[in-house]
Length: 155
Image (spheres, rainbow, N blue to C red):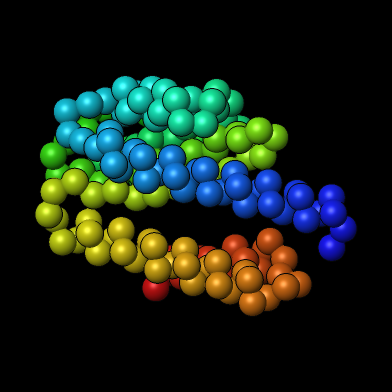
């Protein structure tokens, strides 16, 4: 690997680490809670990214959805919703750190509903399996990865 490639890898890994740190800070500061709107939570996440990393650019819209809004496709812009005490939520963020785009998502569960907690665990396991398959299949096409991801979702 050339020095430039090595630097690019390091910078991309740094962006990934910062995105993971942003999610840790979201949890540590207990931003995800009942009684706030999705838009308020989005504003709080934006302010936190700016405070921690100076980030004011996101390469895609911040998607923060709770309850029934979690079932809608990315392109939808549902009415703002107040997070409820027993909700499932997801955050899909695309912060830009220096010149590098990160794309991170996480699922959160408020309350103790066992079905929602199982769904969260299933999503995490499926993502890990998809990532492992991608890493172990160097010549994989996007279509092949999509088909594999569909099979994971079916399980």
